[in-house]
Image 1: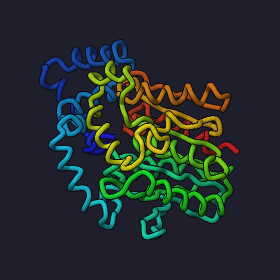
Image 2 (image 1 turned 90 degrees about the horizontal axis):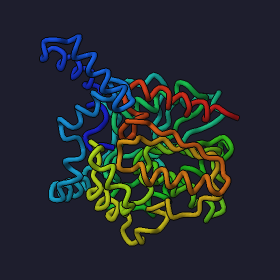
Image 3 (image 1 turned 120 degrees about the horizontal axis):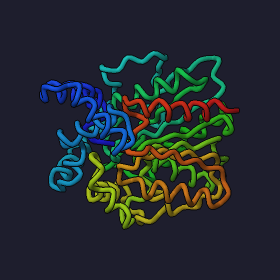
Length: 341
């Protein structure tokens, strides 16, 4: 996910209006804009406006390509990430939210009601250094409203102070508590970006520790290989307005700490995937994580395990979380899966 957060994308519709006004021929501009969006990129006007906005502002890519700036950001996050987190004031949740402490860490629970018969554990993205953004909460509020699920958001330990093994240990505690209440067959694990990679690693880890797999694993633009050495990534870097391979590689190394970069706990594309159940992968064609996300799906699918790949044609990183038309279709698929018995 962009380090600037997805909330900025909500300004994107204004760009379309501005473009039309500046040209002096709004009707012609709108027609040309629509043709480019649909015929060239195969996406909605708003999706194109979103990419225009990120390119105009630099998005998170500027940070992920400037190693000095990234180093400073990582160091600054060491202090900020251990402060008490509060849900952004710009967010108004339509479902109830409670906060708990587990092993000294915050745990947020959305939509906890007596009628809950299932749960979603959501592992948020943020390049291993950021807490959930406003757009995470808005997305999760939608998921909670449309399902009978309690949505559980663990604030797992972040880098540079903490690393992958600590995060997996904490998520394991959350998972054990959740399946004790609902049963593994009624639990979905979801994650986006680096959180999607962590979710995949955790699902693989369950087989190592002898715990039952969740009913399904839903991954949104997952970072499944911190080495970023897939040669196909090069072809996607220029079209990705949000992410940079060099910066993600540095963040991944910081996250791995003493683990080998090829260890499944940080690069789940290398792990044992035959035990995974009902895997859903959502990824856009204009993001550098596309090649590895597809490779992860291919490996799962090759084992005979049930797996589904939803490719966002012409779409960017984390497209299901954006305020764009294509997100609704993706969310519909997720809701249907979560609600399936």
